[in-house]
Length: 407
Image (cartoon, rainbow, N blue to C red; front, side, top):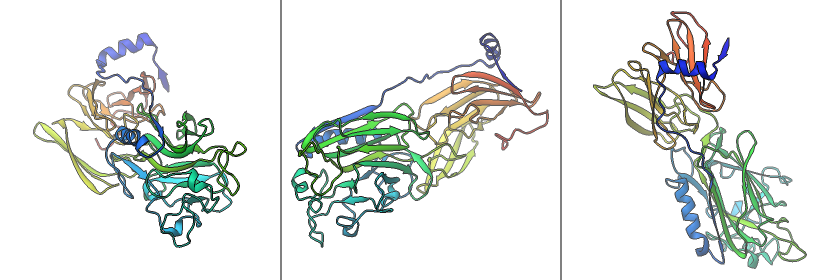
């Protein structure tokens, strides 16, 4: 039977747990970087600021990392994947991005990269092979290729863990646009894993120039899908920019946060959806954590905890990575380091002899503080969704709770 405790009873019960919270979360708004101008130099500063917002380095192709970002500039693509040829939808799956187009009449190849100056077919630069006017209409931020959907002005981007089919989310996404005449025609929409729209933004206008728009969600929101609308018409022969109200737009560089798997997987310290080999080594005073990150095959060691502490597996901050966390039986205190920002939290919850059984009991994607009391078979937990205290009687003395059974 599930029991929800009213406020007065909650206060009385929590007095025995000595609940202490030292860090409170503060709501934040997304960080948006905008710039537009006649040439790459006009937007370079905003691009670099957005890179700094995402943090870390450009992780390139493949593997999975705990920090950093991914970038796609299209310029390393071979001529066989560039105009007049089509680009496969998953050509950049190694960087955790998969594309879709509403005009998918070309099967798995509904996208076009512009030709470079050395292409063997002599295709016109910057989509001049589609319409000769486009060579002068567009310019590139990073030479020389641009990216559009074939037969459509809408691009959908979803994220995966590089090298896998695990659906993923990112903390931020930015793009360079070429020839934004009217920014009411061009915009990006951001959606979470449940399909709920969490934001929308438009770049600044720069006719025949370049625009950059980058949005970083820094309060826990996660982007599972980006929908980009480019102008009001697709690139096509006769669709001349500025004629009869036509506004055509192309894209260049995409920059986005390191993909994180949707949902937490046990013992997943790097957020790639795979458990990492890990051990907790009690020491003479200081205890240590050792783990091999499965995404990048790198070794990590962290000092956290004291002799007698019990390690706890859980994602308490909702970033899809296991946080360093311990339960101290002697005092009934929890200690943890959030993997998202290295914030340290300490909270008293439980009594001597309780078993830590942290898990997501309120379905908000975050582990809840929870203990199981062997003496009477009661679960006690605080739901992270709304800090509600709850008690459930389940089990008998001598039973072993499944969550935290290794303890």
